[in-house]
Length: 130
Image 1 (cartoon, rainbow, N blue to C red):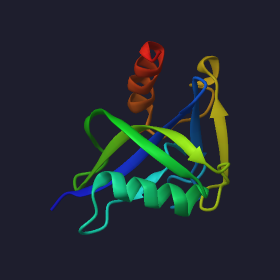
Image 2 (image 1 turned 90 degrees about the vertical axis):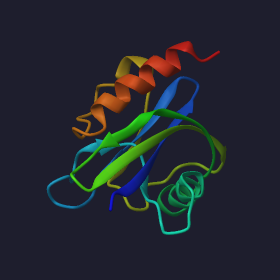
Image 3 (image 1 turned 30 degrees about the vertical axis):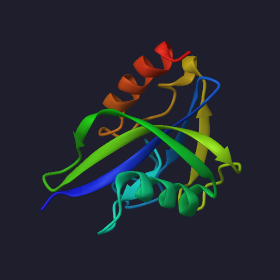
Image 4 (image 1 turned 90 degrees about the horizontal axis):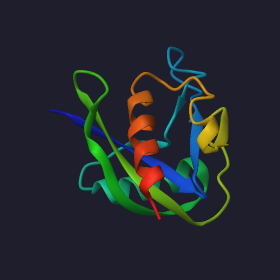
């Protein structure tokens, strides 16, 4: 059975929110899009709204999916959605740090291997947004 992880590419004025992992040890310090596992009975959107509320203390609006299922491990896939803030200021409740990356800074952090190709796809989407 494949486990689905959802992640939010939160965009604000062309900037993308990146989150620095605190755990597990093999991923700590790497940067990712915030999110988490989809619980049984939850839709991707419901899970993403819940995860951003729990991890960042914000309410988001979930937009279109970026790409399809991004492989993480043999049993995990990640689905990434363009998102915008509805309310709140992101705070790192479960991460070491958060950083808003302007377009010229998109690759200024060491993205986790699974998130790096997603950042490229997000960059392409942000470039064509009105």
